[in-house]
Length: 69
Image 1 (tube, rainbow, N blue to C red):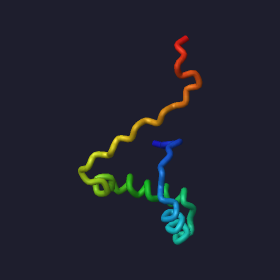
Image 2 (cartoon, rainbow, N blue to C red):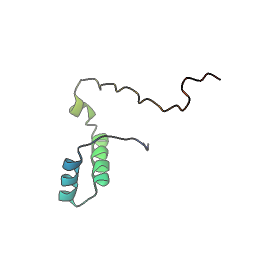
Image 3 (cartoon, rainbow, N blue to C red):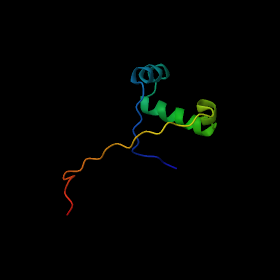
């Protein structure tokens, strides 16, 4: 399954240093980490039994919000 067009805020300085140390790009590093998490089924180990906090949906821009035509 391919997931596209997702924005994940990450700590850029840490990723840049880790990627530079390994000689890869930040994008390739994030892909490798996510692949490792999925392959080794590490989500439960990382998050434990805690629920994932829900984020409010971003407000979408509507040009004519108040108009009911």
